[in-house]
Image 1 (cartoon, helix red, strand yellow):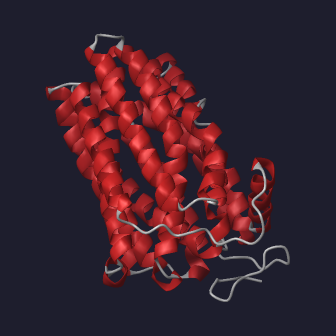
Image 2 (cartoon, one colour):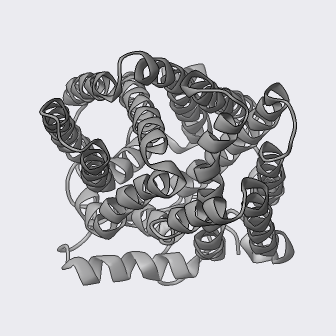
Length: 414
């Protein structure tokens, strides 16, 4: 992966986004533990609902902006905005206002800012890296992301337990400032597109028309609509699994760190030995099944150390999946469409998340964690079986169509 790392501006992007995600993981762990302790499962579910209510409605607009303006500039403005928002949240909390309400507001607003920064960073990577190095670049990105999500929960768990949520938020502000400073040093790369840009409806219609020509992409979006309902319910149960074993905020952080460590290892393996294009989809859907069954084991009456083993396995498989999907999106989507297609992918995959954490929190409160997890995993496995059964769904390559011609450097299937 050294060739990808040697690309100076890509390396800067990795460093800045890693620090940014480090702050984000500290932010999430701090807010999650604080709200769970004060308000219980139902209030904890509201965190995810608030984030995605702020995030999803703006994703289409964010994708359109990313396909019109230099991606570096969009990400920079988003970082500055989030630094200001979180700073204001610290001041309001210090003034003595209700913690849960303030934290829900700030996570709602940062979710909105993320609707611009996430597609911007995703679209910027293939702008900086040649196609033959994209698997290695996406593997490096996965390693850096998961390193941040491994270290961040440890720092966040200790910080919120020792000094409170305000210090977690302050660290988050500093990471946004650092990330913005790094983005400032990266060149503005214009978006190459033919003709004049249309209005929002026309821009989204063009991206949606592309999605419909690619069975692997269209099916993936639909399947993950349902997948994330179960996944969200499972995420709600984690702090209460920790609590049921008589453990606290530090172990909550360890749980997140172990999962991220597994994902980092998975990303490294996927970068050193990239999955051949011919079997990307098959491997992808087999690994998804492994993730679901590993998650079910978290709810079993087993020692905490054994739960962490299954967390590590789930993270390893997830790290591989991330590299496979990001690489396919990078080498199979036209440059001028990447922001909008990434946004449509995110919206489709996450559209039920504002509702599903509430359902998960209600189910845990009314039944128990094992029952909730069993229903969630069954839903996840049954849905994604279609990816293995239908050949065109697991063929992770650009499909040749008259509407969207393939450039010479893009992979294709008939």
